[in-house]
Amino acid sequence: MSATDVVWNEDAAAQLSPRERQKANRRARILESALELIEQRGLKGATFELIAERSGVSRGTVFNYFPNKESMLVAHFARQLEALGHRVEARRGADSFGGLAEIAYLFEELADFVAAHRELILPISFELLSPNEERSRAAFRALPLVDLLRTALKRAQADGNVRRDYSADRLARTLANVFFITALQWAAYRQDRSVHEEFRLALTLGLDGLRVTAQDGQPAN
Image 1 (tube, rainbow, N blue to C red):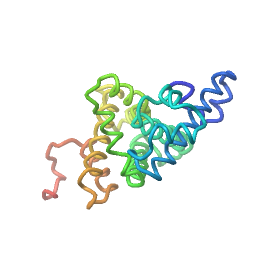
Image 2 (image 1 turned 30 degrees about the horizontal axis):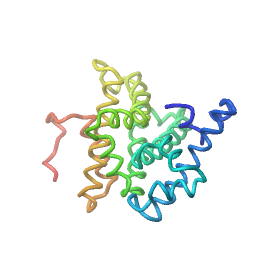
Image 3 (image 1 turned 120 degrees about the vertical axis):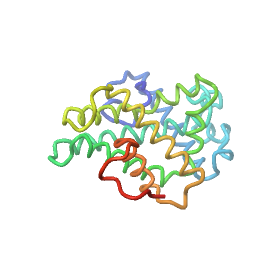
Image 4 (image 1 turned 90 degrees about the horizontal axis):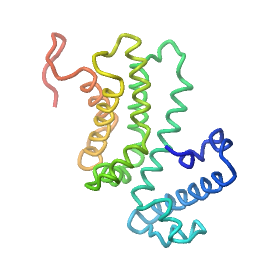
């Protein structure tokens, strides 16, 4: 993620040059204006013309920072993930907050975001699944979810609670896929179920696997 992506973080912003800070502030202003308009008018109603007008910049300037409205939603989600990362760091050190507890906390917080922003999940998912490889790759790289999960998994591996025959990076990408697919399915057609329960179940299956053990009970729906 570039420096302009973290302008909302005061510590990061303080390290920018005046020109970088100006660009970062402009980008943040455009993003905030876009989010306000999307909330008020929906994704389709928040046109680039309206976003530019509210931001006090030209339509071309908006395109320079965000080539499409979906990229704005990805940027918004990225900021939420960065903030989540700071909350996780603040919780580390507690005896009960080991690697597995950190992973569970991440999924609970992600479930909160999905539940509160259901209307954003489908366009974000479509951007990640775009047939345009450049768009899809850019969206995935903009989101620090794998980074958050990798750190938690490394802690869990150090605790002896997660397998070490695969790298934390490979496991993190797998869990990130679990998150994105679960979020997409819930937002698209499973809203009659608790999103938090859906995420807990997905995480349990992702961590425990699908093999039958002596502790398994009767099949669940």
